[in-house]
Length: 173
Image (cartoon, rainbow, N blue to C red; front, side, top):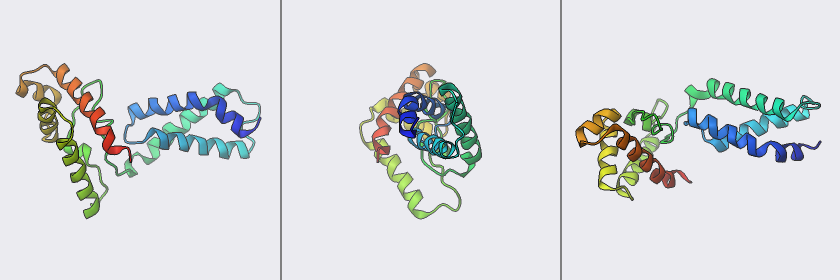
């Protein structure tokens, strides 16, 4: 079987795997994880490691490779990500988690982070979403935000999910 045929067969499932991993380790882009898996597949294919292997075996190998890749590179990333900061469990959204830039912080990275935060704050958020966003930037927990605004923590989680969706347009570069 040619490599292109293999990729065509397993690509939809492989993309679901990367989305699943992206839900747990959201500081990685799912497209980057997908490309990493394809690179690993290409190397294994060229070395003949994939001959006589089932699709399930190949996908499980990709899954384990990506988990190991994330584990090995997690501490080296320095990006801005909202995906992992707003999830269904209602985890906290804190400024130190929003702006993750490796030391030393370059002026460009700091400025870019501040510009993105201002763009999010001033474009398309409702008044209530702005309140939640600002409290989250101050480091308040989901329950503390709900208490301050007089709403349930479940509502805060839903508002954070809305903020996440509205923030995606700022990261579609």
